[in-house]
Length: 224
Image (cartoon, rainbow, N blue to C red; front, side):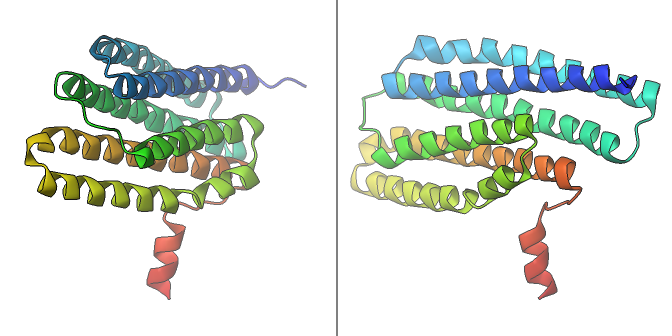
């Protein structure tokens, strides 16, 4: 039997999927602008982000409608609250893509510097994590989401290595210090995207298994 809440749940799921697709696209565009030194492409990212903001507002309205009209409980309430949390993470991914695009604009206006191969691999890993987190949400696959959590540490290590290498370039070649600073900023923004992908994976686990795994490792160390 179809429940009154089901159409509302389908609506918010559809909005999240649209928002997720827009985030994947905007991140890919910002990174292409970096790789191609394309200032015009980078400028498009700010406009693209407005669509993500609009979808975020639609999610807010759909979530409030579901809570006000249907008073969901237990699993349904977890699912609705998790969707709102995922929307917040996706909206921030859009903001981070804008930050990367701003770096791309500045890089395009300055003397070109080689992009580190590690930056390319970091970008690919982060894009993969974002895509995988959204796939886990669609499939309601807690195991897939759990595997994603373990990838975040490697992203952190890659970010640290990139920053260390960029600082070395700044010391050796002060004339390109501005470009190296932007490479550091890109790495930091990518690491934050990975954090948001991890947050989405944690929300998937909460919805599917009813387990809150946020900060679990940190709290376990404290308890120990």
